[in-house]
Image (cartoon, rainbow, N blue to C red; front, side, top):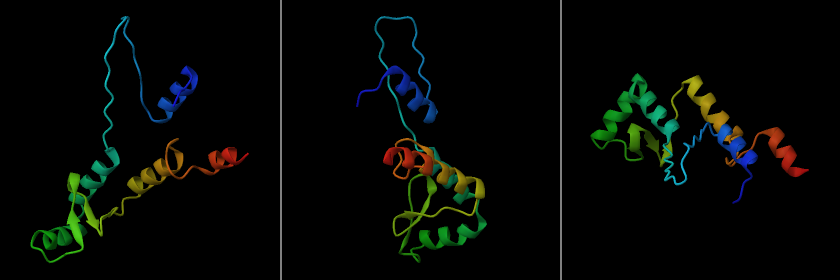
Length: 115
């Protein structure tokens, strides 16, 4: 996919990425994406007293449809359980609706694409 400099910087701004280039003729760069939301969910799981009972049952094998996945997230039928933390839920919804490369575009973006 080819971007103009203006559209690339706009996409990076939306993704909260910054690019800085030193005064050099040759540069080797690497971009590493890390799943911050799943890590936040794992932290919320670790501090949720209601999930402690489920975590104990998973560890002794009494919750066969549950599993502890990466970053300490609890999954049910391989779906991530999102704890009842409003700020975290809002962040997930915002990312799903507002990130340019997400599967579900916000209403304005969807309307513009249909024009």
